[in-house]
Each structure stands twice: as structure tokens, then as C-alpha cells.
Image 1 (cartoon, rainbow, N blue to C red):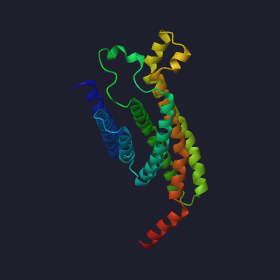
Image 2: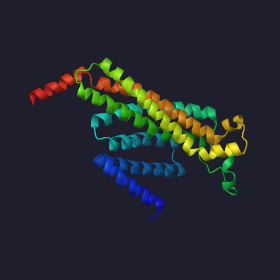
Image 3: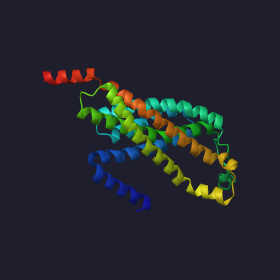
Image 4: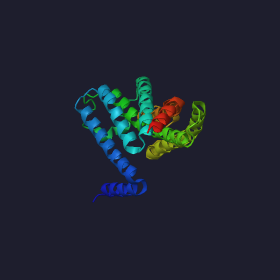
Amino acid sequence: MSTLMALIVVLAILMTIVGGETGIRSFFSVLINTILLILVAMLISWGINIAILILIFIPLKLVTIIFLGTHDYTVAKNSFYSAFLICLIVSAFIWGCQYFAQAAGLGPEAGELLVGLSQMPGLDYPMIAVAVAIFSTLGAIAEAAVAMSSGLLEIKKHNPNISEEELMSSGNAIGTDVLGTAMNTILFGMFGSFLALFLWYFRLHYTIGEVLNEKLFVNEALIIMYSLIGVILTVPLSSFMLSRGMSKKGLKNESRKSDHN
């Protein structure tokens, strides 16, 4: 058994022990998302329109991440709606930023690896960069949406008579904690994945201007900014959608149904 397979087995066992049924579903969510990413890469290499693939696979990945990783249908539904809307907004923002950044393609660091190979394989590198950025932000947006919806739903269950304004206020308080943890996770993830590259820049005496114009660094920094913006937008939208969806009118209808039963 290889090291990767051993780690996958350990991950499956731990997620089953800790999360039970939800942990098992979350594990399969990770596997399905991995398969979807491989499928996207294959379809892009076959020449399928990248914009169409983005529109198709955004909802597919969100459904896999949210509905398989959440046991409560109300939380999953509200999380999906808010995450999908935020993804569409962020996708438009990403497309504009990538157009002006002009950071798509291969950097000079990959020169030695590609000696003798064609660097013009007939692929749309700018759209590939857009796809990579969008799919990189999906996880952070979905995680923030689920965290917001779960917290607000628990507040509503324990205090059914809470007003919409109070629920929105509670959502803002929860959002502060969600933003703090999400931003730290994203930033430390970037630092951990780029530590070797940062050391390379330092040892080769790169100037600040050279670092800021490196394609690898610019693309990674842009993805971090997209993820942070997506999380920031997710907090108020999730609060608004859940508070509207569980308004007093909806609670009265539910109480009437329970009285009839």
C-alpha cells in the first residue's frame, strides 16, 4: 500500500469515528469532488469550452460539498442558494481581474521542466486561470455559507420567536467569528503551500518588484483575495436569506400544520 492510500484509509476511518454518518458522507464528498476536478481537467484538455464547463461544474461541486457534508436539509438548501449566488458574483469579478492581471500561462520557473515541449498546446490559458481561481474559491465560500446557516438555524430553533432583525444581528455576530477563522485558514494555507517558493525568492535575491510580477505569486495572491472577498460577501447574504426564509410568517404556517396534525 502506498503512502497516499494509507493516508486516505486513515482519513476515512477518522471521519467515520468522529462524524459518524455525516463523516462518511463528507468523505465521499471529498472523493467525488476529486473525481469532478479530474473530469474538468480531462474535458479542458479535449477542447471543451471552458466557460460552459465552469457554469456546469460550479453547481455540481457546490451540491457535492454542501448537501453531502450537511445533515440538515434547511441548512444545506440555504447554504447552496447563498453560495451559488456568491460564486456567480465572484466569478464575474474573477474574470475581470484575470483579464487585467495578465498573469495566465507558464512562468519562467517552469522553463527547465518544459525544455523540448511545446508551450502552445492550443489551450486558452486565461480561461484556465479563471477556472482555477473559481474552483479554488468554492470551498471557502461553501464552508462559510454552511457555518453561517448552521449557526443561525440553531439560534432559530432555540428561540422560535426571535425577530428577523435580531436574527440578522446574530448573523453579523456569528459572521465576525467565521470571517476571522476563514481568513486565517486561507492565509496560512497560502503560506504553507508557497513556503518553498518564498525561500527561493529570498535566496535568489528577488526584489519586491520582481516578486510582485511573478506569475506564480500573482496567481496565488489573486486566489487568496478572491476567496476572502467571497467569504466576506457570504456572511451577510447567508444571514439575509436564512432570516427571510424563516420569518414569522413561515413559523406561523409551521405551527398551524403542527396544530392540525
